[in-house]
Length: 197
Image (cartoon, rainbow, N blue to C red; front, side, top):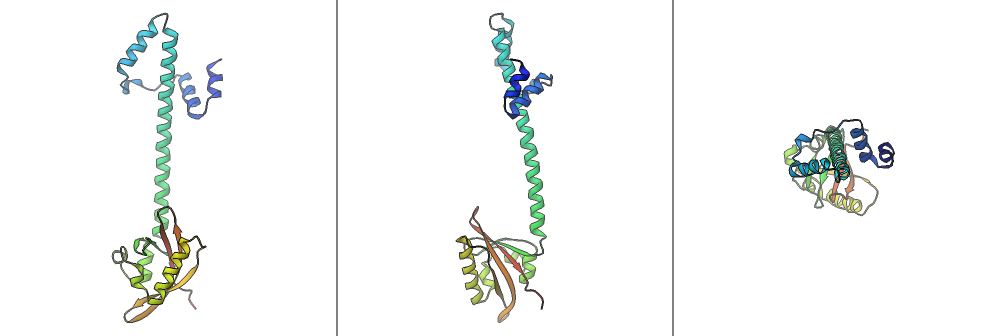
């Protein structure tokens, strides 16, 4: 069986590695410390009785090395793509026209985007780490707990009107929608001002 036929029958990286070797694009083995094993292989390759097996083993090692190099290149490309996607998603989250809060299971704000503190009339530093219900009227606290319980139970997102405390009582209202994130058992709360009349 020709090496082309063998390569065609092998999956992905293995086939590509064999093609690169057949084209003479062998990786620089000088950067790998093969040491004693390579000396033994070379010695065996020079002896008539063991030469075919030693050369086959040497070729197999080269194929494995090229496979590893290809995997490394693919991993680096995947890492760059993931970093680009994360950067893009972070920008979308941070600059969204909607206020976003990440709440833990106790309703404490763990993270927020730029819009959320502006909608709530507090600084970002004050908002992060604060239980959200400290900013809400008593009625809205109950609505928030109910909304989070429904979201945790898998109910579709529902929008509620939450009233913020101001000075001595109720202040402005915000429309809020909660989504449960099972990955880390947290909640994403979207906040929007009510539509203008």
